[in-house]
Image (cartoon, rainbow, N blue to C red; front, top):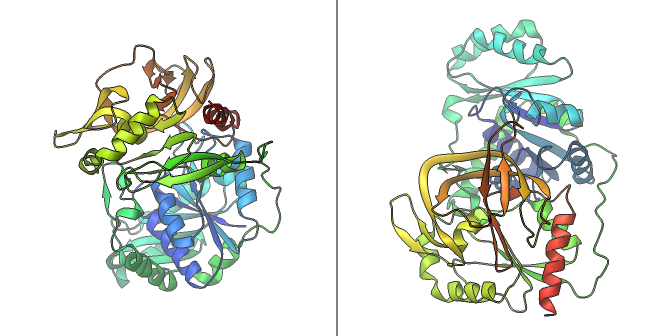
Length: 453
């Protein structure tokens, strides 16, 4: 069956609850598959660290309703338990005016029960009104129970239990205020797992919390993985020998990748060769393409700037015309400079004639992007859905922009964004390939042409 962990709003502790559940299950030697609603990259890193299995994003905007259902069905095969972590509040959707792409929407698509996490730190009797409202708001949604988070004392718990008793809804977990575990965060959310030095002790504490704070007798039957479902079928590359060698930047500065994108590239004939712009001095040998994901190059700008040999190697590869896909942090790395939050400028690759400047302004949301010219990924005129999430801006607008982009609302104004030059596709817009196989196919075709040039 599996369950969805939802919050009554953002910041109530659903990630802590999710990780405590996952850690406790995995410590028992069970195979657990996790999912994350929405476009987030960092929460899935924590899931994967705990479970040892890639977390899958479920996002009907970036992919489709059908893809969400098939992805869930495919990746729950052969595991013991499955769990979906929601996004924001239970009914908060992509537009803010309905629940499309919300946690509730995905729960309905997958026919999964919801466990509601409630922040009780400033509540007593009112908790009943809140839970009753969430249970009755959407009759199609099954609320399986609640987890009470940040409970202050035994007396506080008694008041909460008495308030909820008339609702006849199971209390599936109780986390005390002193049990609250803080995961470090910064300007784009949680700090990625690779940067947390005491991560394993943190996961051990979460596992102990999971062991002691949940009603496992009621939870385990809900978490049981579906026994049968249609598989997600992905066409493989028609030519098997030899695989294309695609160098993928993966280190603490560049870590934002959808696992589905990586899987699709491999299934379509790519051999992914990881390398580090932070520590490597040379690019991998015999590569036919470059892939720079998002991440935090601004945090590591000095180290990136001081790695002169790799900057020269990347610049030379780009000048040779190697097909290159760079999104968000990858785009910033290919610029002339990154100006960090302290106003210090650090030299980057210099392939794109602009400077990335950090600021306090957050650019966030789904984007419909229309390609204005051909690139290694898209034909001119192609429309794609993507997502932006960054606190930097570029000092120059390209003379021939890659994209015209609009927000999720059709009537929103459009802007011009993205760079296409030297066989580079570089944009702030993150793409998910799940429902658009022609994107990775086209990219790999460009890589194949470069390899025989």
